[in-house]
Image (cartoon, rainbow, N blue to C red):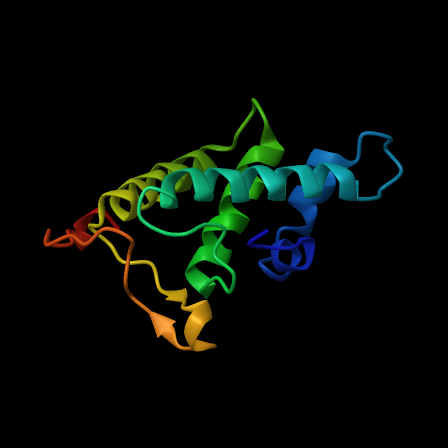
Length: 134
């Protein structure tokens, strides 16, 4: 998993977690629902990044954690997604598509070298990054 319930709460989304998971109406976040959304987010990230990287990423960068949080939040809303979250997802998916093509580089930990960051994807790319989409 690339994020935790604590990561979502740290981003100020506790009210979203409560609103989307408190099926019983007791004012309690349902951890099982949150965990499922987090697992779905990890699966989505891996589906894109596995085109170029070994997944799952063992020590994800803060950027991957942030993307996982955004995806998990999106998945929690199910069919009725607030517009601002839907708009954020357009950016997230564009970023993941660019990462899968090698247009952006995901910093990963090279497990053979300890905690040394590696910028090496499985497949190299010479294409330039167009940051105007962000």
